[in-house]
Length: 331
Image 1 (cartoon, helix red, strand yellow):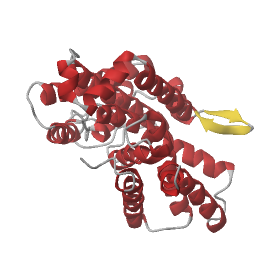
Image 2 (cartoon, helix red, strand yellow):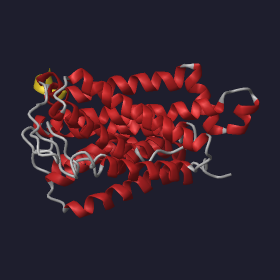
Image 3 (tube, one colour):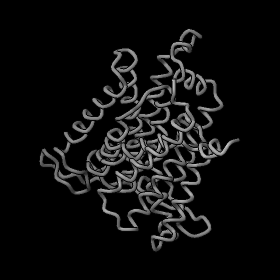
């Protein structure tokens, strides 16, 4: 392998370790259990959403609605338990159904109505942003709140549900690994195995690589694309469930950055080990990178308005390594 090949394959991994080394020396307390917990918590939700985006990227699509799906699931979970006074199982099922239905509608619009994926999912994003605020007239959901009809919401989040976002497992030291991180690792392993080692997953890659050729080979292209968006919706709803469990309320403003961070993680995954394609392992590493970057910048007291700029710079550099240097983006 030439030096250029090594740079393409291992450049981003070296950048990741370089970032850790820089923050370890420049930010006091970065190398600490508390810092690790914050990174793990931020990585978990971003990573779950990014895995959903990865599924749509595999079939040559893109899902801009994941952030609003996650926020809608979070609001739905809060509404079911606080307002309707149902248990955690009902709340989780409702959230997963929301994600699956939204994904199905996105896929139907794209495949059968021939609406471009960016426009279809952008429209869905705006629809959900408005829809999730209607039941409470734009207010967050918490125990004891007054509803628009004058009634009081007396329900509360169950302890079992809150444990999904707040419980931590011991790992060398007490209370280090949040449950949400375990959920992320399990989902990442499942989607990695699914895409790499099942016929369905390999056919999804075939559809994304050359849709026409896959169709001529007899593959049900439309079904694969629709399923990709259903997977994306379900994963986004899981992220919303974890966010609701962590916050313990339905906060309409808490999901504002989920879309950008998840998309950044999924696209950064293209550069991991020179994959130059959407992949679950790269997405998980990308989510870790985004979490480390944001935690380090926060601990260095970097202004909040510079963080998106820094993420953008990193994303551009990662994509340059992937496409410009390797030449894989050329036609």
